[in-house]
Image (cartoon, rainbow, N blue to C red; front, top):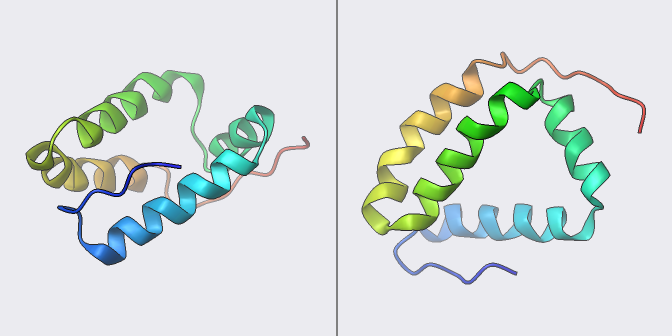
Length: 85
């Protein structure tokens, strides 16, 4: 489980904790399938990792990265892709 961050708004932190707990319960293959289902491809992983690193880096970066992540997520248009696991 991730350590709670007191500087993150409670509602946001609750969501992060819920998502992290769910991801921890799934296999690596299942997590990979979820990323693909959202429309991401291997070429997107470096950018995604950068956002995660920035968000975990400091309070200031976590706040700044939110808009960048929103823009990143919008690039996938909300269409889900289904894969056979």
